[in-house]
Amino acid sequence: VPPSGAPVEWPSHGVARCPTKQPPMAPRRWKPPSHIDERLPSAGSPASDEAVARATTQSEAWSLFAPLQVPNCGDWLAAGQPGERDRRGQTFAQFARPGPHRSFPTRRKATIELVPFGATGLSNEHLELLAECVRAHYCLPCRIGTTLSAEAALAAGRGREAGYGPQVTTEAVHADLARAVRPDAFLTLAITGHDLTKEAPEWNFVFGEASASNSTGVFSFARYRDGATSDAHFLRRCCMVLVHEVGHLFGIKHCVWARCIMNGSNHLEESERRPFAFCPTDLRKLSDTLARATGSFDPAARERAIGAFFEQAGFQTDLAESEKRLALVSLRL
Image 1 (tube, rainbow, N blue to C red):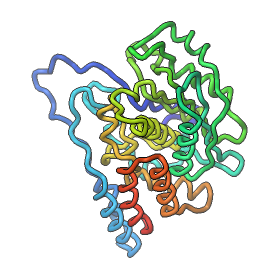
Image 2: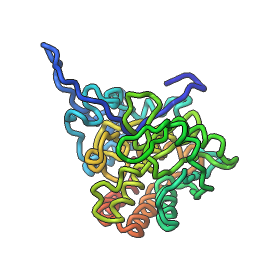
Image 3: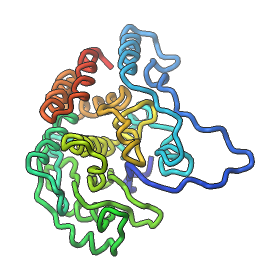
Image 4: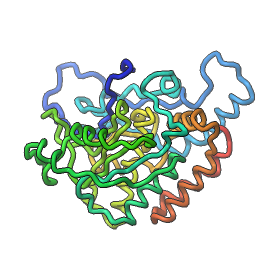
């Protein structure tokens, strides 16, 4: 955990070239860890009825989440990729430790604000669906803010381009966004149709990035129309990256325990392998944060709101999976 005041940033996705040469004695291929330690009571803890019940419930919940596979070259967790540093994962115990990596809403600062950054290409209906998606997943108020101009950020990008028009750097967006944060905003996220990258030249592009030190995030859907089979398919991609970025701003790091919305990704194919849901470990992180901040957390009410959003947005497959989770969330995780 970085010291207080140090910048904490999670680029959700990045691209680096795969190595062309292998060392003479190549190490064994990395395999994703098991989630077994996350679903059972900790070693040496009393085997109370509550602990056993929680373990049983989580075991059933984990059955709804497929395990991660060994990464291929170019995937998020592959050797030489930015996600290689995510391989150790973040357990609930690590997340729960006090420190600047966690953010809590308060009575005065509880709203999540979505700020259009330059041209978005989204209708007002789409923008409202994005806000409803956030409300359902995070149980907090969410509003659409005033559009910010992207002209200065485009000029600072010095004409960088990677096939999707002029790029803006996440650093420039975070700087503009920090000046626009409103007093009651817990988190502020820019949404843009401009392609994103980072200032460092080795980055080709990023889909989004969260800055915990500023409580700001940014995501782009410039690449999300590629191969989209419908308007709903495109909207689903936008909603998923939005939920992912907000998760980072709560302090939840990239997940390696199972297929989860908090998995990283380097490309759209990898991104679409993720389910539209938090795995049991990451849901526990969110529930702990909201319970501490508001005094209560109702997982069943949350899942019902998510199901209603999926139905409204036309995400039928996600709705069916949500109904399965709703059958379990009334039990304590």
